[in-house]
Image (tube, rainbow over all chains, first blue to last red; front, side, top):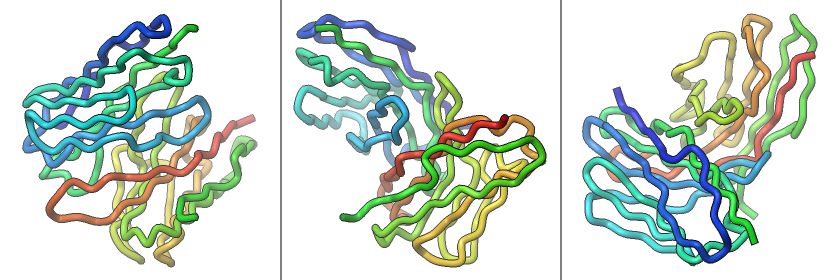
Length: 111
Length: 115
């Protein structure tokens, strides 16, 4: 069974204080790993797709990396507008197009 | 603008009532999905549809039903058989891929509350 675990559950940062979120996964053949951002009361917003170990993707202050067992979302010099819940999901080769989601990490950036 | 719309944004249901949540997309995506999100938890798959007139149960389909009569539309009915329906419901769509990973794009959600 495919599993995704995100840590920490919650993260409080001062503006400008860089940090990383972790997404550990077990999957029988990875097609892709996805990162989403979700603001309170809204639908998730797609950020990145990572396909294979060693791959990196960047968008503004966010950088996602992938190994064979985990993915990290690095937030560099965060701003208050980066406050959100960040969701990680995996798509397994045997699962068709279905996604398995982790529980998310709630990030609060204080000015 | 291309995107996914869900209606209503808020829905209140009395015990014993069936309610239907609407989801429409104009992204020309083949596949559509329904998820449920409970406070502090990740998303759980209810139903998904690869093509018109075909759909499959997800991990928590009991107490829900769907239809896929048009490519653009995938309504979800929450029946009275669903014991704990209060949740945030999210609809998503994607291209259906048999090769490379396929991203799912989400609508704004419907918050259902049972009174």
